[in-house]
Image (cartoon, rainbow over all chains, first blue to last red; front, side):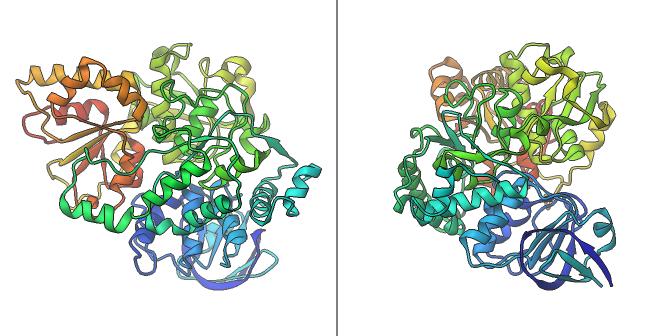
Length: 146
Length: 426
């Protein structure tokens, strides 16, 4: 087991299977078709992201550097949260970007959803964690992978 | 973050629970990025990225209802992104059914909400709100509460206004509250370049391809771009602004760029020069081969990669008046050279309602119509956001549209060649 410490953006705890994107996670491109057409498990629709394209994101520990793309990103993330179809948590190796932060914070303030969000876990986190690994998020920003 | 007594009172509920939640969201948003205070929104108008009543966006529209029901409708007026539907754009019966009965069933509800919240006018739906015809053009140094990645990067870079890459909803919260947290691109430090991009191309780079390459490399950082002066000059002419509009949209969608500086051209680069570059800035050299490499790596997700193009979209972001005129002239000339009168691919040229009105006053509108070209105010991206379109062989010269949909990217010259040939083949 390996442990990493990050900064808590939205507090919470969870244990889930890792889904790892090594390139910037395009929120709109990843979620839009799945959420719009209610696709089971919310498969990633971003053709430019071979790491996770077509892989189911709902309930997963989404590990990523940052999010990229359109400024609808936060709104889409908020919608996914409000619909109860979000990843179990979002774990950023870098500092969170303004779009992901917006969506996560709006989800926290405006819905009853619970999706822990941790950033600044460092580059080693992203080079260590692999899709399919078990990830545990603790209240204080500690992330364990095994 | 230190709030003024007035802001603290809003957070404590002096103007009701909904305003308190709006301020709480803005405070948490600012705290995440180390903001120490809120600053007033000084731009005259806002701009929202939300322009569609998608059924699935019900939770977002519910937030709008909460704001309206709470009577918080006296914030700044705003423009919005393009509408998703236009009967002029080709669609079959099945697509119409999907658009109207499954996807955009809440469009009427949404547009009524926008009227109550303060949409500038019925023609204010465009991603190019900053064009003169539309009238939402902020001044240098003004603080904005905008979303729409292509508009934000334009306002920051070409106009010198100050705006973070806000998400949809957050931008309206800033317009309602009248203040936004001060961080990132609102600060001098946040506007410094972390990348020097040296453009060493032999020919003028396609703006949407150059922007794509830079966006993919620098992600959310600010690039300081050198070497474009031989093509763009040192003044923000209409031609230079148009180039930067398309360039910026690609940097923002293929990466997450919210601000770029062009050496000797954009306002802050002209004023502050290389003092805008951070000491630890990295360098990215771009030549013709690098652009070819980037283009060759775009995935083609058409089922039949050799399919004959069925539809072409030009204008994401929306075209300027001059671009509409230039495309018309180029098509007219090329069709005549090829002994043809009609485009071989149904082609939609998208522009703001105000630009379309101006274009329709000219003879060129008839020329384009005669060639089979369709002019629309639609958002091509929203049009293509459905599984039916994924099966369609759609081509485009927009790198933003390519990024978010199954549309296949070609340069503007390639698009012109394809749509004006007798048989539409790449």
